[in-house]
Length: 169
Image (tube, rainbow, N blue to C red):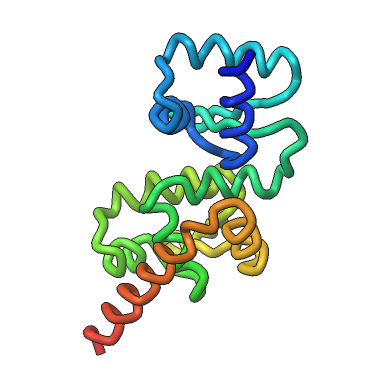
């Protein structure tokens, strides 16, 4: 029971944590963690969402809007894409060039962001234009409330992005 409470507190402290990340942070074996998570889910104290190959864990009653955003910002590439889209809409080629990513990588991550409802995609001739479907203030609030450690990373990414834009002109 003590181990289960430790797991629950970790999920409450970091909603949207992935299964693997939780196992690493708590130093718990995969089988042991699976057992306790099943029990916590049966008790209705937590729930999980599987997106792609990752399983994200949330405390009971966690807000839907924040769930999707926490899943979206769980990877560095998606955070960088969202940061770029905060400046305005972009096409896939532009995102790939600005972030020094391959177009297939951008396509994959954009597809995941569209599925989560964080980004909108609209056809414009042969290209697809992407834009945020969330208010930037909501994104900022979720990061501030649930991932305050990301502020510094995002600030560094923004500085890198702005420095890169200055070099092109």
